Image (cartoon, rainbow, N blue to C red; front, side):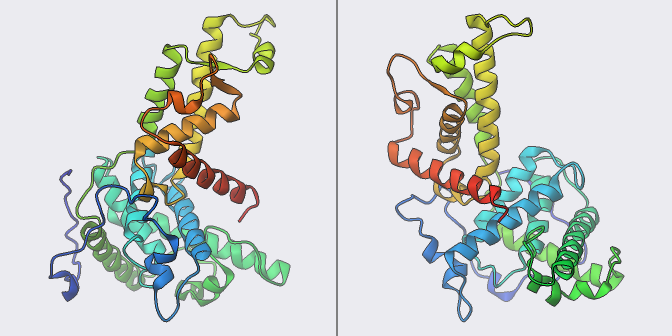
Length: 335
């Protein structure tokens, strides 16, 4: 595990329940046969359980918030830090219920911790202010959409109309500046949540992501000349001069297209609970498979993708692919 310097700003002592040996999630993915959305803490929570669909939507919307907050317009974290924050978030809510902890405050703490983990730390004040402003803007836009439409409108930034109307911060109107006392309380909560997250994940801070594995996989298959474009697409490949591409040029374009599409699918996978079910290598191979089918790229010599992808079976490949494609379809519908 990596060494992390914890913030020391006047954080309240951890709850007494943390004095005993903390529970941690498994350090290996939960086998698919054991992973059941119907048994996640938020779904089992009483007296106000969530449906599996609502739990899934809460994850996706907050993952979009983490991605936007960590991006170039806000915290400017490297991509790997955003991915690590997302994994921390998924692992946290594999052990805790959404009803117990504000998911946006958990997201802030995950971004704070991931920045330290991936050697790109951001100051606590900056993380809170940027995340808070992003959430407030989304709340205001949501409220404006509701007022214009005269009824419920689609979620913006992960906020529902009911959450906006009931949010304590909505009383500040159009002001995007946080009151000092409100900021101090939020700061204490995020610091405490950072500790709770560390205990929840068992202080396991070294996270593998699919990105490195999928690049290696795509390059390896290309170097061995095990993939090719289908005949229809191959006939359409031309250079800037309008002439058909030669085999070296075709291979260069193939590996570039295969890797770029696979990275996009890997980014989508972060918005699902796949990191709780499968290893990063398995997710990477499924992303390469999806990329190939999307780009009309396939194995040569009558082989199948399963012949080329070591370490993943048909069941795992199907499950990962279905979950990613379901997310893509949901995003296209704007849900």
